[in-house]
Structures are given as C-alpha cells and as structure tokens.
Length: 480
Length: 96
Image (cartoon, rainbow over all chains, first blue to last red; front, side, top):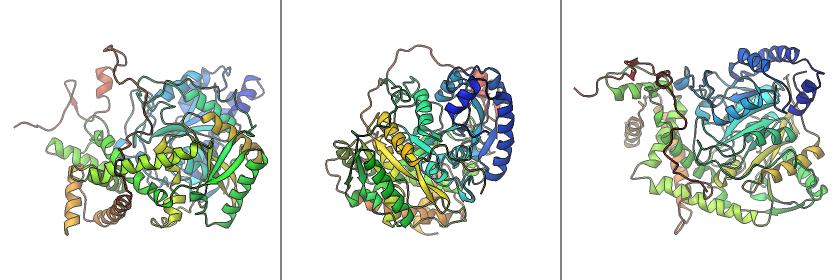
C-alpha cells in the first residue's frame, strides 16, 4: 500500500479513496520493518510526520506526501548529524532553503536518512550508524553518499527523498537501488542550509521512482535564493507540464570513451538495448569520444579539488561553536581533540591530503593544476554539446557490490573512467539523471543522461521516453 | 618514523588533528594514491589554461544593500555550544 508514486498518492488522497491516517499508520509499520533490514534512517520523525499531516489539505501535488531528507539538510529542531560523530548532537536552529520550500507545499517529513560521513564516500559504509543495505539484496551496499535516501525510495517506503551530489552521490546509489536520481544544473537549486562538501561541485537533488515525480520535485526546489549567491535567477520551467516522450528531434551522443570500458557482458548487452531503443524512438544516436588521457584525469582532478574544498569548508567544525567538544588545556587543544575524536579515519585522511594540495608550496602544482585540468575537461565536454542535446553513458560497470567486497582497482581504466565518469557533470555543472535500465543477477542497473546547462527539461523528456519504452517505472523491493 | 610520515603527522597537526601510529599505514597508502593522481595531472599540458574555480561564469551580484534580513537570536546562536557563560562561548584561557 505505501509504495504509491507522488501523483498516485495525490489522486488517492484528494479524491478521498485513501484514508491518510490509515496510510501513514501502515507506512510506519513498514518504516520499522525496513529500518531493521536496511538501516537507512538516522532519525525517524514520526511525531513530526503526524503533525505535518494534521495541516494537510491535499490540494497541491506534494501536499500530504511523505518524504525523507539526507541527514546533511539542516532541519530546525531536528537533529542533523551528516552521519558524523562531530555533529552527533547538533540540532539546527534553521531550515535549509529547500526544506522551507517543501514545508510550504505541505509535505510530511518521515525522517533523516543515513549517508557517508559528511557526504565524503561512495559506499555509505562510513556512516556513524553503520552501513546502509540495498533494498534488492541486503548483503549489498546501497551506494553513497546518499545511500539512505536511495534505499528508502528503492524499498517503496517514500515516493521521494532528497540527496546531495558532489561527484556521483545521488546517481550512483540511484542506479544501485533501481530508482531515478537527478543531479540538477549547478545553481538551479539553492544549497543554503545543506552541510557542504566541495562548493564548486555540490548540488542538491532528488530520488524518485519515476520521471514525472522527478519533474514535480525539481520544479518545486528550483529557483533563486538570495542566501545562496550561486543560485540562478533563470526562470524555472514547468517541467511536468512540458514533459513529452516525443524525442524525434533529439540528438544523443553515446560517450564511447566510457561505454567501451564495460566488461560485464550483461551490462554491455543492456546498454546496447538502450541505445537501440532510443534509435527506435526516433532520436539521432551517434558515438563520440573524449581523449583517453583526459578521461584518465577525471578521478585525479576530482580527488584533488574535492578534498581541498572539503578541508577548507569543514575548518569550521572545531567543537567550539557547535558539535563534538572534547576537553583541552588550550583552545587549540580543544579544537584538535574535538576534531581527532569527532571525525572518522577516512575523513581525517581526506582533510590532510586536501590540506597538502592547498599548502602554499604545493598549491600551484596540485590544486591550481587540478583546476586547470578541470577547464580542459569541461572544454572537451562542451565540444560535444555543440552538436548533441544529450550525452548517454552506462551508470557504472557493475551491480551494487557486496558489503564486504574489496575496493576496486584504483588504477585500471575500468575504475578510473567507467566508475568515476559521472563527476563530468559536476565539473561542468550540467544536469545528469540516472535511470533504471534493467537487471543483472536480480540487481538493478542504470544508464545516465547528461544535458546542457539548465536544460533539465530535455533530460526529463529523454528519460521519460526511455522510461516508457523500457517499462521500468515505479519499481521497488522490500525483500532480499 | 620516516620523512613522509613525519611530514604527514605535521600536516595533520596543521589540519588540527592528531594522527596516531595506528592510523599512519592507511594514511601513507592514501597519500601514495594521491601523489599518483598529482603525477597523472602533471602529464597534461596546461600551458596558458586558466584555473576553473566554478563550472561556468556565474551571473550573480555579490553585493547587496546593507539591510537587516535574516537574523538569529543570541540564545539560538549559543544553543549548540557545549560551554556557555554570561551569554558567551567559554574556551580555555588564551592570554596569560
């Protein structure tokens, strides 16, 4: 019963066919079951949900609809930990801008979802509350860093959830959990009140179980916010109203520099099927390449920029103003002891290496060099957009790994390019949507569609057409 | 402790962390990967290429009128601090 989409729920609530109280009572039974199975929540906000429900009139599409926030969204009066010991007891005094926007629409917050500590990771194994498990197979990871949000949409508990994406932190877990995930254009949605990772790459986005719902949520979140000076003044289109599955005039580029690195025969076969489907739908689909030596720099460029910006952004986490405070004889000692105790080992390593790249003697050779290479990468990508509306790639080269699986070979092209290419959209700021495309060994796989800056509508239309043709909308799993 | 370990330990301190002996092997491993990334970028000719600090040129106004807009109360500002006295955050004595 609780697996409805936003549009279905709206129709059922507003027509009186479904009793909201009964629905939410059953939803919380499922929340309890799935929390035991998936460990996806940091905080369950049951009292607030029912309080929100009291005010619902079900007139707007999102009114009375349940949802979940990644635990790096500030929520006034509700613990916001970013899955870090440093913020274990932190209770914000304000809401993130998008939380205010959704609240005005009358949504019902079900809880705060687990994530990799401070959003720095791709497995969700670094969360203070432990790993998040995949709804399709609980011996596998949900992916990260927005793993809790992905798992809760993928298990049908809520029709949508918010995440954040710095390198692929919405799109990778979306692919692993069989749901739709969007990283919008950088600047399309305000990031005010979202605990940052790397400001030149960070974006706010959503998980849904179909493209129409994604259009609804994105339209609600998008727009200028004076408290985020990087948010854009560009008018927000009516994504849902303008949605069409007629893609006959679309020009789609298959980025073979990425797809050629696929090794799994079933994933290759599925990708070929997606390409053929898009051709059958009338789109022009052609192969393009980016230079291999440039593709090999994606992960190095990302690692250096992201770690450097993160260490700077998180210098405010010192245990003095808020967060985990440890005793010390001097103020410096308080900060050092608080940070040493408050962060996980992998966070400390990333901060230290970020600081290495920012050090005066290294800055030009490391951080500035990475920013220069970023310009070259974005330049190559923009050359493709001169002739194509959409860039198509596989979302990755495997299904969700098992929780105890060893990490990938960090120097192979399969890892360097295929598994890390989604950060292209973060470098260039372009919208990028991951869409379920099939199953391998009972686990969901996905493809990714990248559009031009602020052309979310084109991405939605292409995804909508593909979703209709593939018939994989509204999928979820509660067992396994 | 070799030179690299010493450098990383000092860098840790500058980043306001203590790096324990137990944490050092994993840090060294990640440092080696990080330096291989640095090397990979050195192979790319960036002569005459300006750093790209943001994805695209941002059309925004950094300045605004000096008007009171979003404010918070003192109680709220101090709410999450673990040590507060006389409406101020208390820290160990800084000046002797």
